[in-house]
Image 1: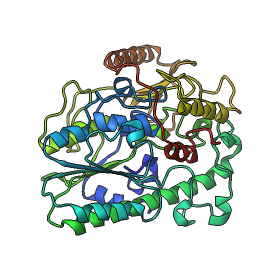
Image 2: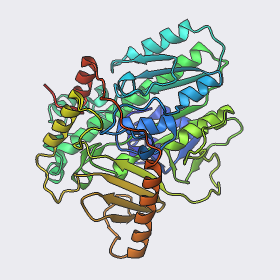
Image 3: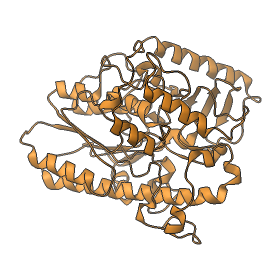
Image 4: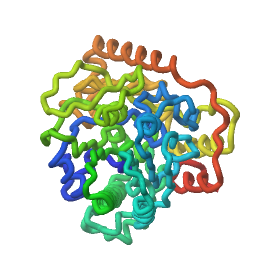
Length: 438
């Protein structure tokens, strides 16, 4: 998991050169999915979908319910029951016990972001293993997440701005949200820093792959590399990865490498992160839980699959938490109220949001504004709203979205207990911009 990595930040997708040579090599020799979608624009619900194959409305994990239910059946649990050794290494504090997202992992290590911590922890685990069981290994790399550091290089910065100068630019969300059109020069600098961080994440991916190869050269790995969400840099006056179900945060890279007897291909069929769970289980020869809306990722370029809608959701961060109010909930609500200080009611950054993609058409639904409609084959920047021109299609897609969300919500877990959050995790989430700082 290359956390916070936009699809178009990966050089294999063609917009930038040489950001991700490790991932590019896997894509050239494997499967690259041209239209892969996250089900949510931020880490917690997106990882919950990745691990369960469920939509956010089904697993219920969002700003109102940040603790995943014990009743959810996770990918790690299913593989552990099938005899797999399961291990997770995460640089992101959301992916851990604080959100109950490590169900089924018999080994879990929370890694402080940095240049060597992940490699050291992974090396120690590999050296200490004595089992010959098959392995399910999950790794989250956080380099591309705010705050941006440039990966130690200035390769992607505007030529007139050096790395030290770029690092002095303000990065707080409230400095840009809803005013981004007036801050384009600064946002070009921040995007340059971000691309450097994406490059750093790719280098870390390369070192992880080397460790696995050196530890057991005979073992055959299936490698899946993706992201939980993207990042905005001024599109629609948005920054970061909240308050949006736009393409900049939902379109993610997805590469699969190592499937036996599968030729390299670029897959044009739209897919979603929810498809990763049933796919890994299928490739492992393990039955998937019943009732999943997701399906196995296609492995040939011309696969003929039934059409379907891909749905993504964003819950309003200021909505009161379900269950008893916690210190975490209060900090989160105050933080997201503060970052929208420059936004007006007409800015589309308030209330719940959903998207439905029936490619090439995309519906963007807002709780507090009229829905919008885009043809992504002609307008992947979502600049021309077709809602007024195609009212019948708009009505059909809104009705379909309502049905999907209503059906999904029927199986969502009940009211959870208050989210337990230790002081160290609170501090880490504050540093990553999710909570009000002291």
